Length: 342
Image (cartoon, rainbow, N blue to C red; front, side, top):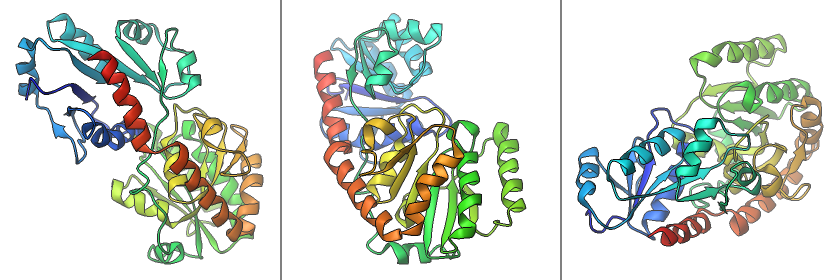
């Protein structure tokens, strides 16, 4: 095992997050192209797990081995292990679109190579990076054979669903979605709005404020906060959506963008994260300003008024993902970076 292994894919994080989701999606495809093992929690099917005892056995190995990090703690672990004699080449994938802290900047300088998920992310790194956009598994995230029947299985009011997925917090703009739905749902009784995402203790007050706003509007049965769901359930919810609202105020990449598009949902997105490189405005989705609930509602309203137009936009969105943002293309590009290091 030690002689054949080429890449350690790390996930040293106790809480499931968007970074974990992107890592889990691409890792099995990487493992089909190059000998890669997963170290840490939430290992997906299709890639072997590397235990800490296995890691110890790699200390005497002479051939270089790639340590692929996506977070600060994983970079720190890689730097320390390399200093102690592990034969690591260090690689970091950066999705953040912001100025980095001094410790992150120092860690980035220690890496042997950098991947950025967009040109914008790369501009904050202060060193050369290979730009590789995220991809999505277009077989797992695919339209339902019958979207109306899929929605009916949920047992919710109306005939159509509009969703907003991601952690329930101000950064993700969940409040903007609730504001837009409070304006629009009374006009469109065939729609129900669904919010899916983790509510952490530090953001419970924010979530409670949303519930109070929903109750004040008398929309408790039509704006549903489901909280965190198993991955398989989230995938089923994508298939029930006619419209998806991406409402982030600040984002690294925003994987839910391409997940919803792959599932054939019409997309209305703030210009955060990778939205401007993923979405062809007016074709595969509609772009709106950040932090503007009125603009969000204005962009969503025509799609609620004409669900057939939303369906057509969703079909174009899936085509866009198939052509530009598949996980297979992402994995092949990452594997090429691996080859330069080993």
